[in-house]
Amino acid sequence: METFTYSFHAAEVIFGPGAVTRLGKLSERAGWRRLLLCTTGRSRARGHLASIESALGERLVAVYEQVEPHVPSSRVAEATALAAEHDVDAVIGLGGGSAIGTAKAVSLALEEQRTGHPARAAFVTGQPLIPVIAIPTTYAGSEMTPVYGVTHPADKADGSARKITVSDPKVAPKLVIYDPLLTLDLPPRVTAGTGINAVAHCIEALYSITRNPLSTAAALAGLRAIAHALPCCYDDGSDVEARAEMLEGAFLAGTALSNVAMGLHHGLCHVLGGATGAAHGDANSVVLPYAMRFNLDATSPQLALAAEAMGLPTAGQRAEVAAEAAAEQVAEWVAHMCLPQRLREIGVAQEQLPALAELAFASRTVRNNPKPIADAAQIEALLRSAW
Ligand code: NAD
Image 1 (cartoon, rainbow, N blue to C red):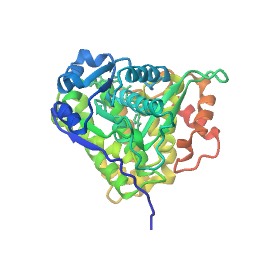
Image 2: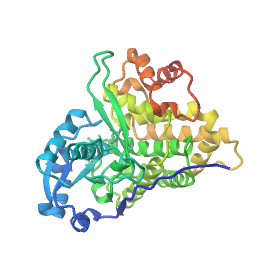
Image 3: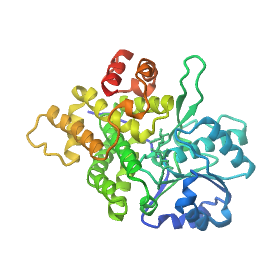
Image 4: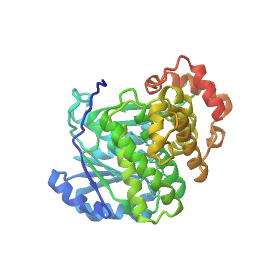
């Protein structure tokens, strides 16, 4: 008999083409009068910023457009100062995981400034002073989770920048707006990389040491949607039906991720992104097939379920065979979508591998891997084969 815990994060999720136009009414209903938007400079050129401005009118009191990948701590400090200057009462993250992560970091920092106390929730149902609103335009899934990462500058001791993960129920967005129309211009490379990131959430949720019935159901439904929609979105980004199905897959993947411990794959991708600046989607594309094969002997029943959800013919197969087929399918998607397959292609130098393995071995996420990892040498061996 399995035992489990599950925490709900009291969020409203609005899904549908044109959903972003409802932001003004939803903010009015929630009583948010002074909102800050965190996004990248490209949102203005793409017209996404105009959609938010027209939905919010005077309620949008400030826009921070300098969001950067991997959420550098200096950017969080700038956005927090802007939020304080404009006395905001809610923060919007519009874009990928970096924009949403910045909004989450600002929310906690501002609460600490205003109250003079650490903002961390004392209990799993703790609510924020400054709620986060997430409007995702990639498939990275941060909008559904109580987690963000901030990258701190290179440490003098070992020269590596470090991405520190913060987990707190207060940063789980209170309102999530999924509007497939905002994803039609997502370039093929970002579609593909963040799509593989969503696949990774489902895979690591399925074999998580803290999996539960809801995370498993969400992960399998997410994989079904993604397996069908991701190649279509890559081939034709303007296909609204496929974009909607893929965004639904990302929602399910993020839901699966939101309540369970991740493992080796996520731990490694965080270390790689923080230390080398590799794009998160690229790191996911290289690492996922290797992480699945590393874990295969300990998790084949769960990976066999993944294979079935991906639509692979698994009837009558041994779990190990189906699990290998799931890893092979991921590798094929990566190749088909011209994503990087080697660490050397994403700016990782061979000399960095021992230090990266040590950093990963020290990470709590890697310690939560379903197949126990005894030493950094095991991780270094994986990194060498992926290099
Ligand atoms: P990202 O946010 O850095 O965005 C990638 C690129 O896509 C950027 O250049 C961005 O400008 C562009 N982009 C976004 N939307 C676009 C659109 N509609 N059209 C055109 N271009 C668009 O990358 P990401 O992969 O979405 O997120 C990665 C970050 O999120 C990492 O820091 C990762 O650690 C974090 N993350 C966190 C969680 C979590 O649970 N907290 C989950 C997944 C990822």
